[in-house]
Length: 245
Image (cartoon, rainbow, N blue to C red):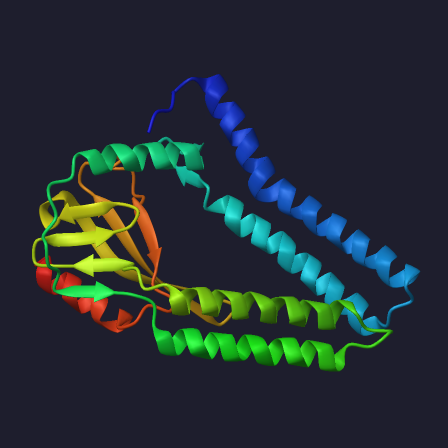
């Protein structure tokens, strides 16, 4: 990771940070609310669609804020640094080149849970059917959103069901992920399971910090691996503590 201490560069990065993280989400929310307002008036839709459309607009603005927020890395000098995808791929490639030969056999291999995938598919089908059932001439936005969510869950559940590739592999020598490849425990500064809770929803991630990684000088993980839908994910933290003790 390369950044300068030039005051002009810091000012430009700070301005871009404020715009993408704070100004842009507000603008997106306002534009979405405007579209909902004129759409409901033009097609004479009921209050359910209008109110739900406003809530959806605010949710879209929040999603934009959330996604942009995680694209910025706080630096020790108090400024912010934006991480681009192209840079991330390049840095990960450099990290992989230093890896040693990985073991032939792993003690634990984690893939998507078939049961969770089937449940997701069933929920998707139910939501699609519900959306078509409640759709009517004066209420379109809410039923269509229900259908879209259902289709997303159906497709995601099906993709996870047919996906048999490993997402995480653990052994006494180290760990492997698709993004980072294999790393010995001596090259791993920290690997911990963290829970993030928001709006009564809890998401579980595995954060991996490398000793000589791209972000070794700042408190930022090389990878944040989502454990959602992974079979046996409750065993991961115990195994990591056991192998990395």
